[in-house]
Amino acid sequence: MSATIEIPERSGTAFRIAEGQTLTVIDPRGCQVADLLAFNAADVDEVISSGRTLDYAETIYLTTGHTLYSNRSNPLLEIISDTVGRHDFLLTPCSHDTFRHFYPDLPTHRGCFGNLAEALAPYGVTEDRIPVAFNCFMNVPVDGTTGKLEVLPPISQAGDHIVFRAAMDLVIGLTACSAPASNGGSFKPIHYRVD
Amino acid sequence: MSATIEIPERSGTAFRIAEGQTLTVIDPRGCQVADLLAFNAADVDEVISSGRTLDYAETIYLTTGHTLYSNRSNPLLEIISDTVGRHDFLLTPCSHDTFRHFYPDLPTHRGCFGNLAEALAPYGVTEDRIPVAFNCFMNVPVDGTTGKLEVLPPISQAGDHIVFRAAMDLVIGLTACSAPASNGGSFKPIHYRVD
Image (cartoon, rainbow over the protein chains, first blue to last red):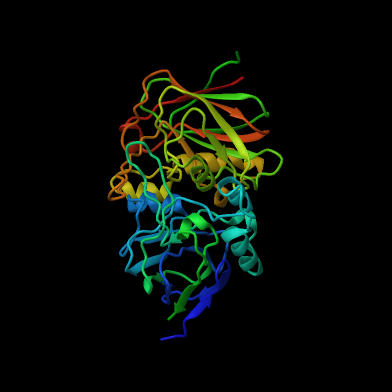
């Protein structure tokens, strides 16, 4: 088993994983969110797509057994284990703009969007190419009657994790979320491991 | 009032509209879907974003009074009238791949994805830049408990429409949908008007 790597609070990182490798995203203290992006390592114009994935999965709540698809309808990541069962795939990463909108009394933060943009720049991914992320542990219930959605604290406990297997060589972007509402008002690290 | 233009069944178009103009999308026969995309006419890297829009609207069901945002958090279109009240903003346009997935016994069709790609190519929009569309009249209820989504026939009746006001100069992509499940198994035209 490889070493566990820490993503410090309110930051992000990017790295390559090879087809067949597994990525384990761990919530080490509980109640924290990790925004995940995935790009075809050979062509970053092929990118994770919420719209394709939700269409094929026929559910907004993805868990073990579901596949995350690209904009070209190719499998990028399969979820092979999940101790939480509640993640979000509707919302884009938080940013200076979302901070201004939701937290007008707080200092803004570049958020997961800015952290992902900086981490992914060396791989040729620009800000405008950052789509809806797969937001590990983010708890966004939807009222099926009214359509109303809420961003609630995650239900993840310390040590909970989700494991993905790469279906192709990928560039991954991953954060420890910076938005108060996503993680119950506290900022905590995220751990991950590639095996 | 300008002339009403018809988009023939299983086809798509693209056109410019200026800031302040209104776009009326009409379901002339009822129970048909029109996939809508919008791009900043001055820079097509700025594009309609389901993730930003759902985040700001705090609902998956958009209607009169809601704004469709770009990936840069700028307003693109405001919904100023809506006689239906049920549209989808979760799913990507149908394509050869989605036909293979959902209709293995039918001949595939390039679908709204292929129709949008061809119509938008003269504006510098390539296939990989086609995101989740705002799917006018598409009826995709979500079960809030299980997360399961279904693609049901639209509830729109003949003559129902939705009206958008452009918040900036835009390139619009618009289709008459090609997927059997989206429109109750029939293929029909869509009408639109720019005023």
